[in-house]
Length: 498
Length: 101
Image (cartoon, chains in turn cyan, brown):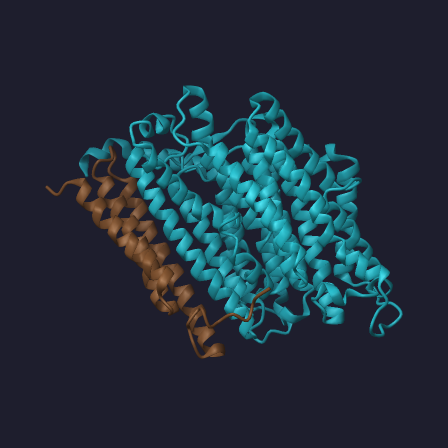
């Protein structure tokens, strides 16, 4: 033990100097503790106080993140390289905070959750905790931090899915999610242990990783990397690790589904980028290639896009359909990962901002329809266009954006990714990248078939039952309207995000 | 001294047993036990490798964190399985299939 004594003061001072850079995370920890105490003693009617404190804490943390984005130019490595704070991480953190705020709003507008006899205090308590996990996922730069942050988000997600277990379906969804998730993270941990054994370090920013790995037999490296990718792939729900997501998305309460299909998925991409840096960056610098990530990810992306889009055609349940649509979007975003050398990361951040807005909006509208008419079947949307005028009109705009047609943000986002992938193709001339581009274009056309089932039913078919003339707008309707306008504004002026 | 390869063989065997249990068992608790096997295989690897680490710390720290997180995940999963039993009166995952296309 004594040989560490000389280093002790150095380690301590390094840890202390890092604290000023994790203020947004400290704010979230304090919020988490405060929410527990407030929920115990003064929750208020319908957990009003609890939700107000959770929301305030999240907004304060988002503001601190924004402050960081102004002051930080270069990437900072903190706490002996466990986390990295750079502009990409801050961008991801701002997206997560935005999604979580929308999630709070969404919970407040959901009557099924509100009526729950346990109250919503525990759900609000989970929010700062899960946001902390997401932030750490965005910053993680060693394997330990990757594992801890993924588990933090996973455990909170299992609880959120099973939270209102008012019926069998929900418990079923949470059990499938928990078992599949735990198995995937166990497999990932084994892969990480092998990587640690091969390289002798758990850091992902260590330049020696590639040099160390080049002494190991290639099949062993491939095994370790593939096992590690299983855990990340579970969060991203790419093929072949996607089959939990339609079931879980259908069974979970709609606000939770909206959140799960947005924030943890984007965080999974943040982790994937960090995980790829040593292999892409240092690998390219030294010219040693230990594992062919490009081909692996291209194959996964193609399979994910095809399966997500084609399976969505056969779905009639709106939540299942949006689940497959989010799988398809994962495949599309993987295209940007392949082209990450060029403007990949910038276009990816834009894509995720737009994706977060449109996905949250789509689930909010689906939830509004379900609350007012009791329907979650797309075939029963007949004639809804006259009943819920504003919501369905917004839905059409959001679906246009999800497909990727102008003049919406979805079009610009897809255009950016296509452009960076095309630049990559011109630079490398690889057949894989070309097939990726072709698949992306074809599946975009395929996605029209299922997205436009909704306006088809809502506007062109006659209703088979009577609706009152029109229903008024409520609080969530205004949020939906604001998000829809935001999507169009982003489509017309994409530069406001840059 | 026991060579490193012996540890790796045992952990590979543990991992395979765990995967087999997860894929073949028809009982949610047995699946959890299989997951525990896989986690412990990884933890054994970490501890064994950390003997050859220059600081001899990161592997052991990793093992400690993994043990704690595994306990947390199992606690949550057991609560969820208990809830499933309340509604379905079974914990056989193949019989719990109300959610489907």
